[in-house]
Image (cartoon, rainbow, N blue to C red; front, top):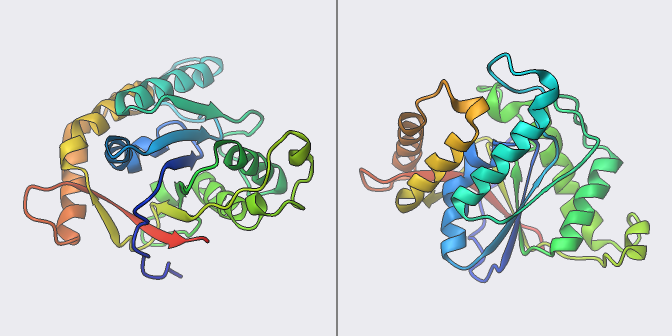
Length: 244
């Protein structure tokens, strides 16, 4: 299974909400593109579902990990230029499912922020690469976010308790998927790569053992080459679907 060919990106986007499972997901896959959007005048906010308590590469006490990773994500967002970072509560890292509670909370965030575009992880597994993008939490958040975009956030009869909170229905016009099979919409991030590297380094608990600059340049060079960009350019790639 794969996505259809990407639609052309809408030219008049004003707000984007990025919804991901763990601290660092958005930075590994999308930080350069988000930096570019910010430079183009698009307002971007993050919604992170867990605090990544199952992650980490050292012997830091487990009880310290949630606060540490939240702080790392806020520092990474600041390095890119994002100032609004919200976390959900009550969702355990490693055990996410696209159930009604998660759909409701993402729907509430969409109605609260009222984005034109939503960026999230792919709900489709990549069988050639079951690590990384195909982490079950990533798939679950991609599926729950897709359901929140349609039909939940635009349907006033879905989660009617949100109306009592003043959260009126909202139509998201476009959704971008990261990490899915055969992404075909490349974004040139060459001039923003330093901000992506800084954001990834802010996740010290996850990247301390990684040569971040080399990893980023190798991956983004390959993506740019696959997209037919000139030698020396760097890119991130997505699938773009219209949701109106």
